[in-house]
Amino acid sequence: MNIAIVCYPTFGGSGVVATELGLALARKGHQVHFITYSYPVRLDFLEMNIHFHEVHVEEYPLFHYQPYELALSSKMAYVIKTYRIDVLHVHYAIPHAYAGYMAKQMLKREGIEVPMITTLHGTDITLVGNHPTYKDAVRFSINESDIVTSVSESLKSDTLRLLGVEKDIKVIPNFINLKKPAPISPCKRAIMAAPDELIVTHISNFRKVKRVDDVVRIFNGIQQRLKAKLIMVGDGPEREIADQLCKDLGIKKKVLFLGNTSDIDKILCFTDLFLLPSASESFGLSALEAMAAGVPVISSNAGGLGEVNVQGVSGYLCDIGDVEAMAEKAIYILEDTERLATFKKNAKKAAERFDEETIIPMYEKLYMEIAN
Image 1 (cartoon, rainbow, N blue to C red):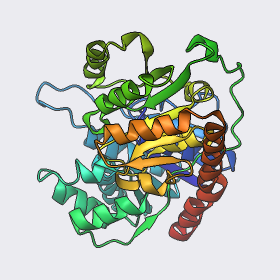
Image 2: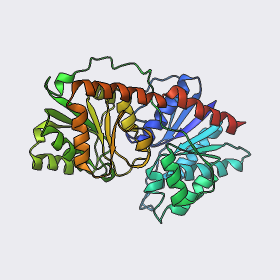
Image 3: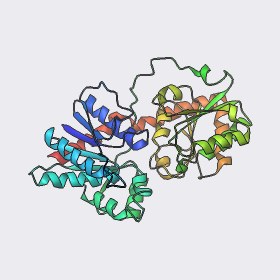
Image 4: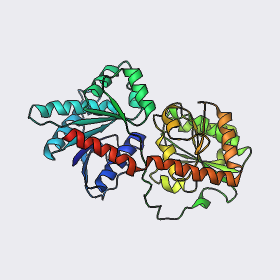
């Protein structure tokens, strides 16, 4: 099939999932066309069956804000018509589903019909979609989609509750490629920590919803009892706040801020515990990636995290903001070598539920149904 995927090309969860979906589909022989404003960060330049179409937004002094949706819908229509796209799959309701609807209307006037699947990822509903300025447009875009999917049961419930959409929403969870080759270079743990130090990791876009200050406080509780290092991966508006908190707590030398990187596998290979105390998570892709690498997870019980992190098996879920409880559960896992090994083994096993070989066929089935 010829499949067009529209997504954000950034390090965020929706962009990562959309890119990995495209790569998996390409490996199965489908022609995959990415339409976005820059090359997706998880996409290799030399991949079979992968095509990239950049959306250019011209600068006009007339516009205070440049009309990305207009440029995007025009590019969508061009790609669909030129490459005879069978299915348009947009990730994130705004602006992608809205632009997709406009592209469909433009093509309809030329007698071209293309079905559109919209996948909801989280903040497009709980944050942007629920804002009074955008709510009606988001609801309209979802209702006008041919098929709507969400990445968790929790997000499906939130969408129905917050927006009252009429469309049926199918849950297809995020996934992980469990057969992906291990990093070519060996796991260089000694670069990050001493042999007797445990390694705790957090990965996010450092927005307020990720509660990175809680990450630092949880680690502070851990390092008071155990020798440990904290690795903070990502970047965003809360990074400076987290950095200052490390200085205030006197643990700056025990915390490494690495910024954004695509070498997640190389970092997780030497990680002992993963922290994700978010205020809201539609799924928790970073937690799944950690579990797939055999890393237990201490997380909040927000949103879809309870569908990923298995209480007492792959880690623990605690109330949002309960730093003390998260620190205690982390210490419980880390303080005993055999117990840590058991949690690592269980985490990897729990991640198998989300193997791409199970999840990708769910999307393929939808594509076949909607294109016929």
